[in-house]
Image (cartoon, rainbow, N blue to C red; front, top):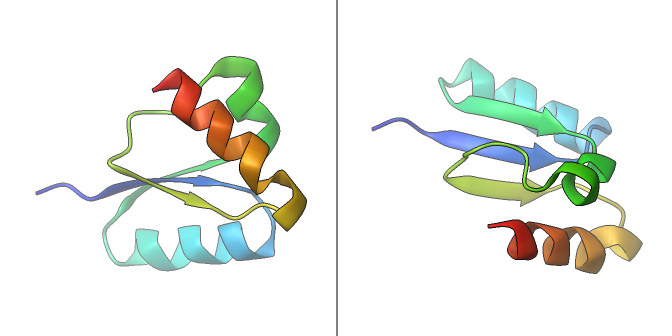
Length: 68
């Protein structure tokens, strides 16, 4: 089974998770949180990890939910 993950947030946390999971064979898409609202959900991942500032979590989550 293919494991895929979209990580929203290209900072230290998001980049670290992306590198570590890719090294373990995950298919990882790393996206800036501004991409979500502007272009809909980034990719067809089976899971999403939000690595955004606390103040952005609600807006980013709402953007993802609305575009699924």
